[in-house]
Amino acid sequence: MPPAILAVVTIAVAVTACIGYFYASNLFLDKVLFPPRGPNAGRNINRANLIRPWLFLFPALFALSLYLVYPVIETLRLSFLDRDQGNAFVGLANYEQMVSEPKFWEAMRNNMLWLFVVPAASTAFGLLVAQVTDRLGWGNIAKSIIFMPMAISLVGASVIWKLVYESRPMGTEQIGVLNAIYIALGGTEPQTWLTIPFWNNFFLMIVLIWIQTGFAMVILSAALRGIPEETVEAAIVDGANPFQIFFKIKVPQIMPTIVVVWTTITIATLKVFDIVFAMTNGQWNTQVLANYMYDKLFRAFDWGVSSASAMVLMLLVLPILVWNVRQVRKEMQ
Image (cartoon, rainbow, N blue to C red; front, side):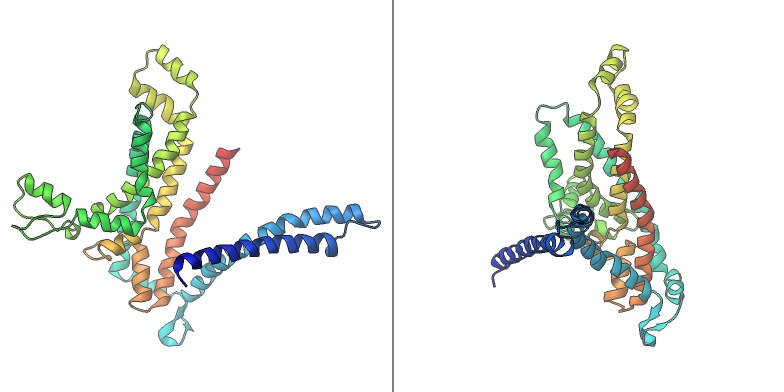
């Protein structure tokens, strides 16, 4: 079956199944389980109304349990087993093996480096763009262009930037933009940017910053527009210059939004995989935790250590995720 037709059929079946489920479950609730008749009609109606929201929530709860809760429990279980010993329970042996490997600590160092650079740079650039474009007549066009990378998959963005960093032998035409500029400015020979120790991590980070800046810009632009004009006008009357208005009036008022954007990008940064996998595959000291986990599972076939590294990654993400949810709830109150 052609993919387009298969997609249409899948959507049609899914929508029909959802409508059928909600219709049948409500019918069973109202006609069979708690019929609104007899001496207990009022009580039955109240009971049905208490249960009805859970009927609507059940598909989502079931899907979350199947695709989130169960995998976490199973991953935790596998982290205590050893495949080479017939899935025998080995306690913390997988964790001990993991922390004894230099590649794991390389991945941890790189993840921390990504954690410091990417959220800060993405949020700062997003805030800068949001502030500048709001003052331009063609600001909406600029915002659309800057937001465009958000529509590109991480793998697609990685391929684009890998071409930017492409290196050809000296004397041949450079198709990589960065090397073409480097040679044009007097460079002696093309550089293989992705193999330069330490700095190659920053070349990879640029890809995620390029993508996440658009996300930060959209959220922060909405926050800036929500600032009461009275406070800005009062600052202007008091003689404040544009920098003082921005840093002392606007930024403090949108600080909760900045923090939410920062932590959201932080979570995405901690889980970074596609960029590293597509551009360097963790070579040349660019390994990260998600790619380390992938290597252990699909290359070394060691699901014990892979599961252990997945649990470490989850423990790093979980506190930030919980804190972020709490901040969002505060914003909504």
